[in-house]
Length: 268
View 1 (cartoon, rainbow, N blue to C red):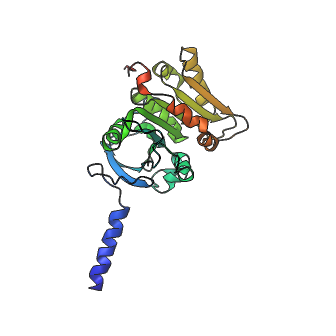
View 2: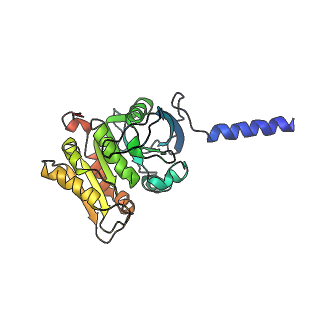
View 3: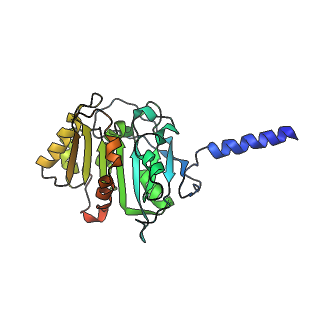
């Protein structure tokens, strides 16, 4: 009898700690971050050349947070922020919640108005190697998301991933904020009409500030009027802490809706 009880307890613990697969109904628990998963495909990066090999598909764990605050809820649903973490958190489910945007939720739970999703990048992979569109479409279908207010942000590796996701699917995101990342300036024509607020430390030893400066300048020079760049004097790599702490950041996100602009063509 004791053996059966122990086996049952182990099964319960394993079930509760395992990610919820995308073909199951994830537990909607307002006020908590719940671990789920979805099957995605690898995709060739647009913003960078790469010799990486791409598998057909893979399981992507993601944390989802449903707000207890209804301040920004409308008949269409809640605004959604997708947060892409940096390289240090790859393959580490719990660690993905301890850096950047997810930390703000813990401190501001009572007033946090966004459905917030934190995917966990597989080990030895990068966000730029993924097609995030199925994830976004799944989130819109599964949760009370307002498709007019889907926002994307990420830091470091996630900053590069944010730029690349915009290039792949400019019609998905109402606004985006890449932090300490970058993109090849030649891709500027595809980003002219997207509200983008980039952040970078002027003394960043990990990702050169030029990665952000050059693409933002190219967008502006080619007629983009919705680009915004904040450079932090004397700051190194971590500029996401002050960026995500600033209430203006969230007001800026919420000021944009996908329906505010004409459909963006992906081009070739």
